[in-house]
Length: 249
Image 1: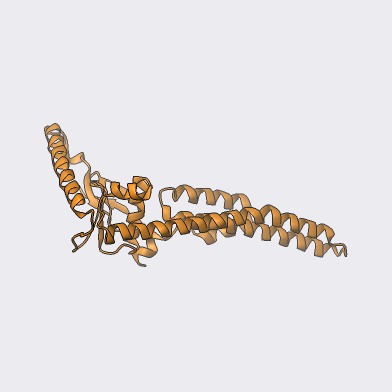
Image 2: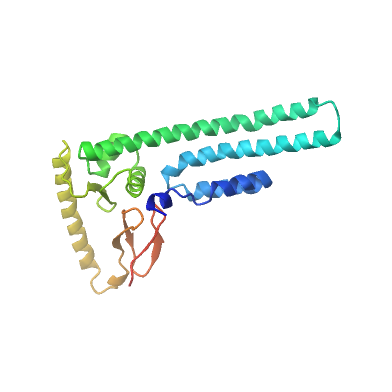
């Protein structure tokens, strides 16, 4: 299974949730809530989750309608007006929310597709490397931009790129940016490097005589390529793709 398939794999499979909704609705709702919570930091799952809620309403409405029809057929009554009333009511109660969530899912997918195109254009065509600058251009938060770029790199929507969450920058491998922002980005990067060196020197002087082995170190995630801070000897999930990362002692 490729990296793009792994990163697009939901925490709880949609089929399990729909089966739970069909058999026992409260369990399905609980699984939906758990999935939303687990996906709260993964923007690329939001459209699929909204669409899944729409599927859940349709599934439960179909289950209720089928049960009503079975009861009416087993009663052998010729008057089906009661059953028709229940079917119409079910269609209204479950159909309207389903349509709303389908619209939400489609709107979210369109928004993310547009954002991915904007990210690609800013980075590859204009040479923008600073995540802070991309945040200003798109109006998205730094967390969202960082997560979106991490997903794009892992899913190969943005090829030959490297994300550095510590310096808050994204660079293209084996390529020098030539866009109007390249000189500004280079200056910003040199300034960031200088500040980082100063901070590292200050931290080193403050930690002399202490236990330096417990200091967090930067490590690249093998799943999405983003940089994270990890304490040696401990493991944690990458906040962007969920892959387990660690540094041996």
